[in-house]
Amino acid sequence: GAGVSQSPRYKVAKRGQDVALRCDPISGHVSLFWYQQALGQGPEFLTYFQNEAQLDKSGLPSDRFFAERPEGSVSTLKIQRTQQEDSAVYLCASSFLAGIFYNEQFFGPGTRLTVL
Amino acid sequence: SQQGEEDPQALSIQEGENATMNCSYKTSINNLQWYRQNSGRGLVHLILIRSNEREKHSGRLRVTLDTSKKSSSLLITASRAADTASYFCATDAGKLVFGKGTKLTVNP
Image (tube, rainbow over all chains, first blue to last red):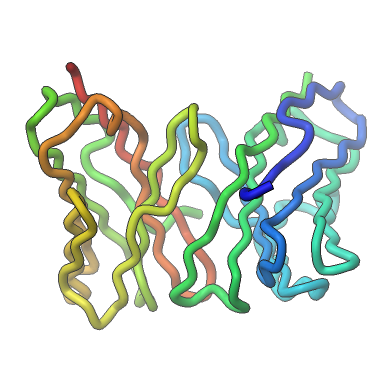
C-alpha cells in the first residue's frame, strides 16, 4: 500500500479493558509518531520512534499507555485499563527521514476509540 | 497542551472567494506547517515554512510567517467546495504541536 494504514478503524471498549491499536507506516520510513485527537481539538503528540528506538514518550498521558515498534516497522499503541477520557481518535504518522525537523509527516486514517 | 491557536475558529465563504486563516504560537520554532483534515482523506500536509522564511507559495496556497509576532497566515485563493475542511497549523520546536484548527466551509 502507498500510505499509512491503521487498524482497527473503530474500536469500542468497556471501561477497564485493554486495547491494542496497530499502525503500518509507509515502507522505508524511519520515523513514526502517535497522536491523540479529542473531538474538536487538534492532534496532540504522544510518542516518537526512530526505527525501533522510542526517542520521545513525553506525550503519553499515563503509565497505562505503552507503545512499541520492535522491528522498526509496524507499531502498536497499547492502552491498559481504558478509561472514558481515553476516548479519542488515535493517529499514526510516518516520515522518511530521522528526526522531526523539516520533515513532512504522512498520516494514517486513525483509529476512533470509544470507551463506554 | 496546544501551542498554536488558529483564528477564526470557523469560516464560511462562497466558492471563488479567498480564505485567510491565522495562527499564533508561543515559543521559538524551527518551522511551521499547515495541515488539512477532512473525513474523506484524513490529515494531509499542505505546506512547510522554515523559521528563516517569510513567505511561501504552493499552487493556490500562500503562507506567511512573522517570527517577531509569532504568527503565521494561510491564504487559499479562488476557493472551491472541495477546500471544505479543518485547517491546522503545527509548530515544530522539537516535536509537532498542533493548534485547535479553523473549520472552513466553502459554499457552492
